[in-house]
Every structure is written in structure tokens, then in C-alpha cells.
Length: 393
Image 1 (tube, helix red, strand yellow):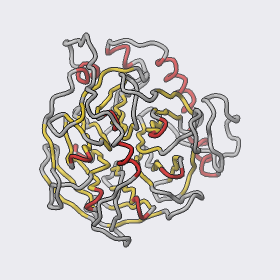
Image 2: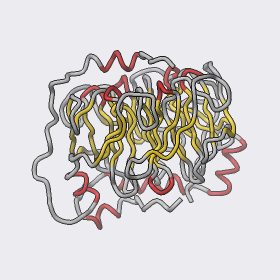
Image 3: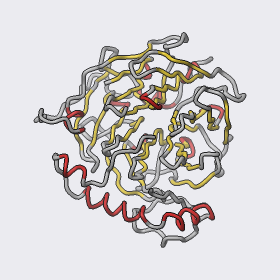
Image 4: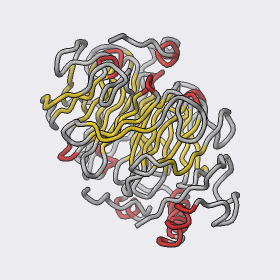
């Protein structure tokens, strides 16, 4: 099992391999993890770098990348993000990659064929099954679809065909109440971990939706937030939070204990400007949508940059205010390219694979993308925010 350990009280903005020696300035918790699990994280990073140096479409070559399958396991807000999306180019349609290969059923071929809508959930409203500005989306046990219905201040849970199962939450700042929640994650035991955005805290609820704990308050010191947004959890239960207005990622144990942080405001490698969403691969790559820098950055578990890709624009591989990010069991990266109103998919080595979508309200069209997630069967879940729906491809 890979280990996660973080250097405390230091922001990492250097390239992988250029930081301090192992063990320097480690917290007592990090030392414990390091002593228990050793240096396997570094060995795995070396494998990732070697795999990224060459690209091949064959499944055997892809498996050699070191990317094994994951084990089972009431006000409408007007944020700066909504305003920035208004400056997108609604008439620019996506160019689809030519030369699709139609044989086999590998993830690459499946993604090349993605563009047809399977089904959609919602429409604007406050009744169960409807949304007002949906933002985060996650996959729960048995491929349950979990949606952060932001301006209805609630979580809604659907089965894998889109049938509403339950909803919980209401407007407020008490336990189990929300004020324009944003990101949502589901851990291995089915607990919901929710970024309660305007309350500047994280809430954890049990599988039935009952409140368990919360942590955080408004501020910029360790463990505090300024508009927490995207959130995810890893195989060991660590919680990663996009602390948007503090321009950083914070990491916590499952009980809410602060573990570490990385990022600072800026556009240099390792710096962030309004990070929105985050995903962690099963090889411990931390993938962050660096929204206002129009790029995706990939970090190791110490907060050091492994790679960065994307620039501002509308060509394949470019972004305008990327929001949601997801990574599948094979390491393919999916990005909700919000300002371009499209989904982009990248190989595990971050090279462009394909894109689909354009501005509009029809099937397969988007207005203001937010969260994105991928199910175990390969279906892609997309929060189509300004159309107040979730589309499934």
C-alpha cells in the first residue's frame, strides 16, 4: 500500500526531485507513515515518470504504466466563477480527434467513442430529483450518483440509472445544514464528505445522511478555509480540499486533523489561482484544476509538481477556466473545460485523447460545467450547472 506523508508548515512549489531530503521537517504523523511504509511512494513516482516518456495504444503497454485497477472498496449565488464563464465563446464547437480506432474495448477506445448521451437527471427546481446550480458530483457504492445541489443546499443521491433515492440537507449553519455547498466525495465506507462553501467548513455525514462531524472555519491559517470547493478522498482515507480563495490544497486525516498543505497564489509551477476541483489516482497522483491559470497540475503526495499541462485557449488540450477533474482506474484524466463548454479526456501521460461538447441546452451540450466523475463501468457524470442538470455519457 502506498503511503501518504506531507511536510508541515511549508508550501511546496518546486519540481519533483528538487525538494528537501526525505524526512526533513516531517510531522510526527508523517514520520509514523514514513517509518511504516518506507519509500515506496518515490519508487512509484519513478515508474510513473518512466511510463510517461512513451505512449502506446496497446492495452499491454498501458498496463505497464503502473496504473493497476482500484481495489473494491435559499438564495441563488452569483460567484466570480459564474461571471467568468460569461466570457466564454459559446459558439465555438469542439473539434473531435480524427482517426478513431474501432476495435477492442480498452478504455482508450471507449473514450474515443464517448459523445452520445445515455441519460440525464434533473432540470431547474427544488423538488426531489431537480437542481438549482448543481456543482459537485461523486460516485458512491454500487455506482450511486451523488450530487451537490448547491443552491438548494442539499445532497441528492440517485441509483446508477438516475432514479432518486434520497436527499438530505437544508439551508443554514447548524450541523447537517449547508450554505451553497460545492464539492462532495464518498469514502470507502460510504460516508459523505462535503465542502460547505459559504460556511467555510467541511462536513462528514454517515451513509444515511446523519451528521457525524465537521471541521474548519473561515480564515487562512492551517485547517481554515476561504470558500472550500472541490474535495476528494483517497484509499487511506485522507481528505483533500481545494481551499479556493486561499489558493492552496489542504490535506486532513479522516477525523479532520490537519496533515499538510501545498500551493500559493501565483502562476508559477506549483502555484495556484483559484483551484476548484481535485482528484487522486490509485497511484497517488494528485490532480488539481488550476482554474484561473487555465491548466491542470499534477502533484505527488508531498505537494511537489510532477507535471503541468494546458494553456488558455480553445484548441485541443487548451482550457478556459477548467473546473471538474476526474481520473479513472487506468489513469485517464477527464476535465470539465468550463469556459469552452466541453469535456476533454487525456491519456495517463497527459497527452490529449479527445473532446466532446459545445455551448447549448440540448443533449450533449453544456452551459457552465462544474464537477465531473467517472463510474466503474466507464460512464461519465457531468454537472451541467447553468442547465441545472447532470448528464451521463
